[in-house]
Amino acid sequence: MSFIEKNNKERLDFVDKWSKYVLEHDDKTWSKQQNVIINSGLKSAKMTKEEYLNMKEKTQS
Image (cartoon, rainbow, N blue to C red):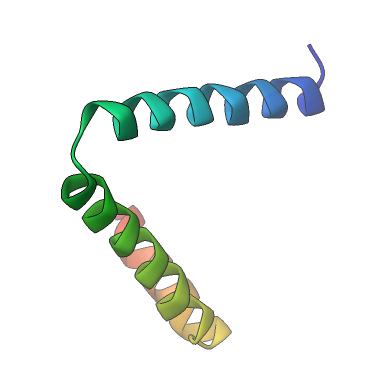
């Protein structure tokens, strides 16, 4: 399996898993989790390269 095929399979598997989760849990539960992900992305988008690399280094130790 090529990298692209493997990547596509992983993405589709994640979509299946997430859609099942959303169907099985109430809106408040999964929307709070989605909010954390979105806010995290927005926060990291505002970081400088140095701030991002510093944060990444801390999480990997």
